[in-house]
Image 1 (tube, rainbow, N blue to C red):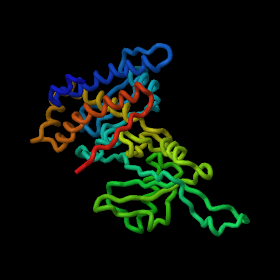
Image 2: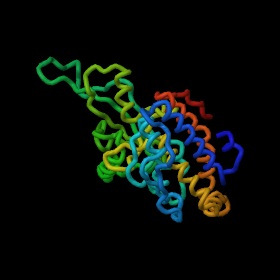
Image 3: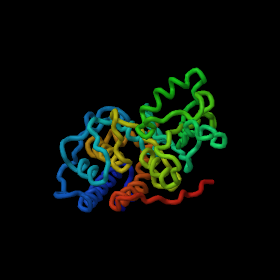
Length: 305
């Protein structure tokens, strides 16, 4: 990882990936039952001639990817996933899109720490069902606010893409649950019936941790899109693993293509690719430490000015 800091983006993904593989060996040594070593990547690139967002990587037999996924509690991927889809599922990368990328992004998720009520407790006399308690949240979407006529269709399309939003319903009606934050960004208020009445804040947090776990910083939650129906996506750690493996393969076996992609005079994605290589130096060691400790390591969010 230190070597990755001092080389250019032309070869940096090779250092980053093989540093991550060595860290993966440590994670399997710490947490995998039985044999913990591996001698294969367990991955395969389908066609390196495609544009970078369309290059797809798929699992291939048993190897490092499968072993570290199991050791860290990440759901195994079974199908090929495009680099564009992986990229857009990483919270740090969603706002630095690659040219031609059309996949669904990770979406910010703001959870209320207290249950909310629908109904009037003060007027309840015990003769009817008590008001229902709900757990509320807001998702923030980087897109134009759907028109009133299109909101039902938008929600019907949007919610199934995110496993963390399974069984969610609107808090309020279709017309008042959405709010424009600014041009190109809006929020949607959603809710779930509380699993039990009178939930305390730690219980509410555990409910939301199962759907949109805090990511790297105390107040940051995201829902991430699914790549395969009914399955959760690989964890951010294993999604980075897939990205860095793919970039290392491009850097090794398609060096001209990779160099041209990094050329700011020729490629609209050059700055985004360099940014990804820079941010990986910060994010990957953080996620590795979480994988070794088997628990989140949440930091205070730096102040933005």
